[in-house]
Image (cartoon, rainbow, N blue to C red; front, side):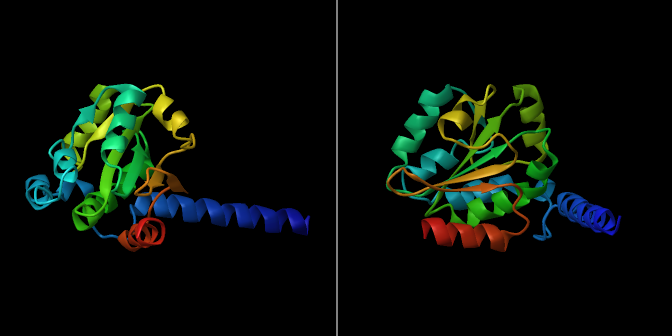
Length: 191
C-alpha cells in the first residue's frame, strides 16, 4: 500500500511539473504575440546569403514537400540549421514560440532557422502565425512525410539540429522552457 502511495505521489508531481511548464510558456518572459516582425526582418536582412533569402520568406508557409525542404537544406549547407517542428493545435509549441522568435533574431546571421508545420491544416497554421509571427518560413508537412524522412519523432514540439555539413547532430524532444536552454543547445551542437 505504501509503495502505491509513493508511486502515485511521484506521478502527481510529474503531472504538476509538466502542466506548470506548459502553461508558463517558458521563462523567457516574452509573449509570442508581442513579437515585432518588421523589426526582426530588418535586422535579419543583413544576414549573409543564403540566410537573407530564407528570412525574406519570414512567417510564410511553404509547400513542396520533401523535395522542397531537402533542396532548402542543401542550399543552406555550410550553415548550421535549427528546424523546429510545430503545429497550431500544440500548446507546448505555442509556449516556446517566443523563444524561437528571439533565438532566430539573436543567432540568425550565423544559424539558419526553419519551421516545419507538421500534422496541421494550412488555414489553422496561417491563423496561428497571424498572431504569433515567425522571422523564418515554415514548410508544410501535412502527412508528416518530411518529419519521418528526417527521423524527427512523432511528438510535438521537436527541434532538429543540422550541422554545416547537412548532418543531423541532435534532436531535442519537447518544449524549450527558456532562451538560455536553446542558446546552450545551439552552442553545444552547432557552435
